Picture: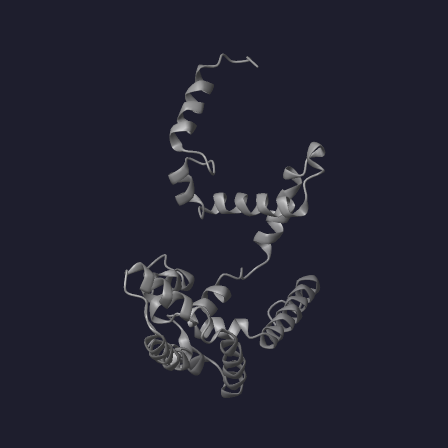
Length: 233
C-alpha cells in the first residue's frame, strides 16, 4: 500500500475500511436503502441492474416487494373520494363505488413494477427525488407508491441533523423551563427545525409568524411595540 511505511496513517486507513465494510454490510439487512434506489426517478431498476451483482439484486427486489406489500392500496380510496368531493360530482351509488374500487385495485397491482421498470429520467438541477414525489401530478399517477416513496426518502441519510437538534434543546430547556413536558419540547424543537430549514416559510408568510392570530392584529401589536419608549415596562 501507498502508506504502509507510515504505521500511524496505515492503521487509521485500515480501521476506516473495517468501519466501511461493517456499515456497508448492514445496509443489506434493511429494505430502505435498496428500495430508495428503486424509487429514485433517475435510478430505478436500470441503475441496480447496471451496477450491482445479480446476487445482490435478487435480495433487494425481494425486500422491496415485501415493503411495497405493506403500502399497496393505502390512501387510494380516501384520495379518490376527496377528488370526487372537490370536483363537486354527485355522490356515487354502490355499483359506481365498486367499479371505481376495482379500477383502482387493478392500477395498484402494477404501480411498483410499472415504476421501477420505467425509463430513468433526468431530474432538474436542485430537484431531489423527494421533491419529485411531492409533486401532485406524480402522487396522482402513483397514489399508493408515492406514500412509500415519501416515507422512505424523508429519512435523513445521516444522524448529524437529529443529533444537532438534540444538542440544541439545551437552549430550550433553561433553568426556568424545567417543567416543560417532553411533548412540548418535541413540538418546540420540531418547529425550530422547520423554521430554520424553510419548511414553515409559507405558513410564516401567510400568518406573519404567529399561529392563530390575524395579520391585522399582529401589525397593531408591532406598531404598539414600536411606539413604546425603550425601557418602559
